Length: 420
Image 1: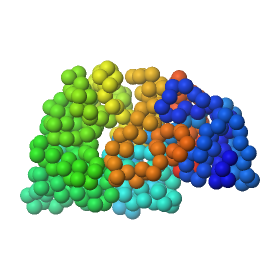
Image 2: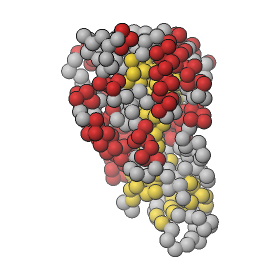
Image 3: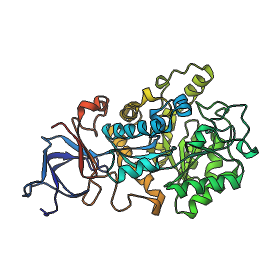
Image 4: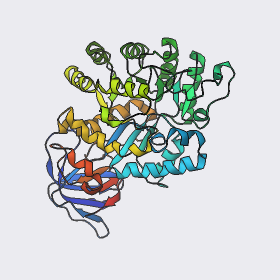
């Protein structure tokens, strides 16, 4: 074995993130990369950290393609009224909890997490790798407009809302403002750009069937992202909005639950990703009947969406979209386990590891983790993996008790949890 080895995880069954079958062996870590996977235990020097898996499954760390690291740990009133230092302190803690749920990489779909990402990458604080989008770009009265109804639109000279002032959202009307807004996120370090192209469940002014941004406005964001070698992801549920986003050059449709079968096929024809969530009615019980009705309408499309995406072979990613409901933060792992209601467990765990990583890689040279493979357990890959009590290729239900069943969490070659 190489003298550079820093950790050996012996006597494990490896799910590599791609293949169905588990492979028995030992995983050698060298620094922050996986050095080798061998069926014979090599000799190793004193001082190497040794973990005996005792026959458990070793798998890649989980990933979340639609996460809000800052938004998931705050309510809307907290975001509007809270001290900014307190908000960031909460976000640091949320990043740590995300890692402790077994998520070693996330694509942040909206929020000012550039500094959090930098601190994590430098080892200052624990947390997952983050692909940040920066502020969610919305039109006036769109899904990202959290101003009051009596506020004057920023395009008409009004002051930005609190959500805009902290960098959670950006309201931009007209191609020029959208172009500048997208460029602003790229300047701050966004690896991809997020726009709101249709109505949402929890937003105050828009119905689910509303179309948001003209095709020229969407193209402005797409052009900005393309010039930086990356792409645009678009929040949208309805059929016409999905078609408009795709026709304007959007590469990743977020949600899409109200798509019809022809629209799902259109995603495949245009080689567009579907980044969606296994929403069900009992996830939420909103006090506002209008909001509850929208949530139930969206949830009604979940089963068909997964069925059609599999039928046509659409590139499909797993995300959670937990936002402004801090009491639902642990649903992140619950929603992953729920995927097995819509597909085979091995398909689900592959989606939440290597498939998600393919989507993350679409940001090209903007990829902060481009130096090694991600979402897989193979020589040369980032050393991000879990050791679990259970076989995720056969059953995901054990993740519901993740605090007990995820025994070891290694990210970047460092064991952040080890109960063995």
